[in-house]
Image 1 (cartoon, rainbow, N blue to C red):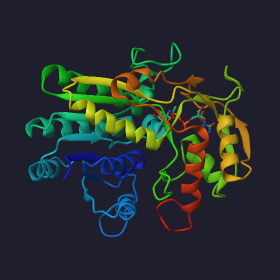
Image 2 (image 1 turned 30 degrees about the vertical axis):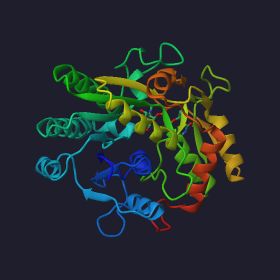
Image 3 (image 1 turned 45 degrees about the horizontal axis):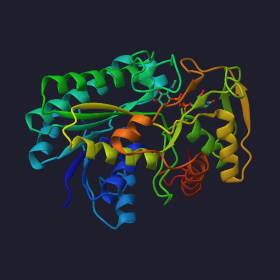
Length: 350
Ligand code: UD1
């Protein structure tokens, strides 16, 4: 049996894709999730995890557990010897975080603190953290490398990513046997090529690709393009979209890095290429064969014109780089969306 890896938030979009890659790479993931954003399947297993079990013909240890449940977490660490932890769990809606800052700070920071403390007392010293390019705020230069100043983001969600990064960095400084890899994601999209797992936002999607995919499948009528007067190729916002399977492979590379007793390391996970909103819409029209109606709407508060990575460091130090192009990202997203028009729930209401 491979090394045991604790995956928090492992039923969610990125977590579930990483669980799949972990198994394929020979690891033994133990998954926890509190269902705050993931769909529960039969029994107490998340539907995403149940589908990975089917696809890979395996069983996955899953626990419904909230990281705020300290005794529950301590019990889990008593039962298992984890080689490392991958921490994905957290609240992640930007707009909601502006309206409910205390909830975001309390949940995301307390969850991270509980996890790190319980790791410390149980001698688990290897951590991969799901951070975000949002920590860079409005970029002062492009492409964005890891030396770019951080802490400039304006919403509480983004600040929790920044604060947790700082906490982990300080812990690694204080305890020399700690190793952590902080992965700053650009914009993860797409789905596993099986079409069995993918992104399933609850309610109206905040992010571009889930919204576009729901328009293509007939679940929503029209996309609002937030601003067409940015200083970009066609006036719409430019982002570095990265296939979620490429992103997940970056996490496997990070686990290998921890083995080198690397201390605290920070890597961008992006492709280095920027696409505008309208270019993405074209890509999804091609993949789906559907017209995607859109209208130009006012800019969204807090958005930046352009954001894309310099991904060189991850290639040099992790031996990882993104392989899938925009066409493949759109094709895989469309397969997931068309096979699962209402996501993981079978109901026809949305
Ligand atoms: C957003 C978050 C970021 C978070 C990331 C992953 C904001 C300001 N930033 O990044 O903190 O880490 O998601 O969850 O919310 N767009 C439209 N119409 C839509 C939706 C989006 O035109 O209905 C545009 C946006 O203006 C932007 C681009 O599409 O130019 C990408 O937006 P989105 O998918 O929300 O990602 P980010 O804003 O980059």
